[in-house]
Length: 534
Ligand code: NAD
Image 1 (cartoon, rainbow, N blue to C red):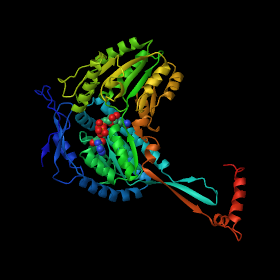
Image 2: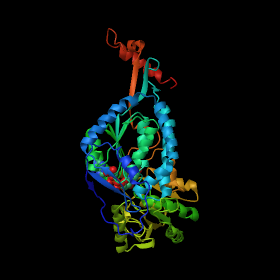
Image 3: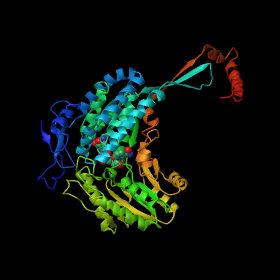
Image 4: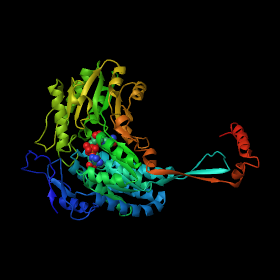
């Protein structure tokens, strides 16, 4: 086997006293043996954004590996689909307990491969437990066969069944290694499917450990197949073979994959990019708003699809808000510890740091003002950067319209709410939005005018995300389909209607000797039906 170092740039931070990352190589080497690829494949280093150290190595899979993984998954899935929904749900409930029990170990893995601060890694643990519990409780009810009204009630019966799709392909990004690889898979699994997943090559170990815990909870071995490798090869091979595809990632990749799934006529759900906005009205409680905006913009180092990158604030309070927000942002604790404490972690990669730096320098060159942060922090680790706040941003700057996907936010004062609503909606995206206000009724009225799949009132993103019974996803170029709620479960099934006609119903359709019986009887029945209670 050969090792390919894919780190784009040698980190220039102080390596004299490197921290000892958890977990060690023994654990990641053990997890890598769970990857479904043939022996002898080339290896890729997974580098920690926290320290620049190698977390582990994963094989670079091929299309042949995917073919073998799908075949094995399909074989196991047939038996899994025969189990009762309650049995499948019981696995999720045991997984719920295991995730909470093993949280420290999962937090270490998430931090090591993604670089986020531990507090934001904990959000992933919370989400896992909530999602597993929710779908375990919902599935037996939602997947139960339902009787449906028929044209001839009593004479014809119709029952709606939910049949698993079969093999669900999952392609996930690096920013939430646990949530985005596993949460959607939980819904698909409880619905009776198998999973072939390509996690991002930068963050494979968290998913591998989580699926191992699922097996410990009772999932049959082989039902989930993890194949690592490039999106264009492994991802494409999954799309070519799966019965449904769940994709989370950029809008650009989402469009490519949409065309591929369209060609195969398989179902497709996509959670894509955003340029999410917050509106702050003049009567908002400023203490609460400042704290809320800090989390909304800088949780997960701003690498959150529902993160706020634009703040529209009533001009009456714009300068006070900006001053207080900037002061709070400058106090945020940035750090690489694998422990609770730092509020801001590292960016996940060289590419992320580069994009942020490009957006920031383009804005500053064209006249924007840096009101907080603004500098890279290489002494902390290879990809650390201060959370940064801009004002005086204009439409010719990249940051005005493009998703930065990093800790960079621009503040825009507005004169009227109508002007703010128009500005928020002036984007190709429509993922998440936020309204901070004193009068909640007025805030909800503003929320209703914003073209975004979720809108949080007096919160940045967590209330909408954590409402797992409510659908979550993007309008416009931010997505296709929804995760969470019933939609997030039933999309992994085919609806099948089984209708049974009685002998009497058959008689009613008899045309009789002159051929008019059928038409006459049904005309009478239709006239009568109008007066029957439903
Ligand atoms: P990306 O689209 O580059 O990659 C996402 C995944 O797709 C990776 O696993 C990648 O290997 C794979 N991939 C890339 N090209 C592919 C191809 N041609 N065929 C098949 N698979 C391919 O996205 P990223 O940069 O890793 O993630 C950041 C983006 O994801 C941001 O735009 C962010 O807003 C978005 N995102 C959205 C959500 C959401 O829920 N809406 C959540 C997280 C991230």
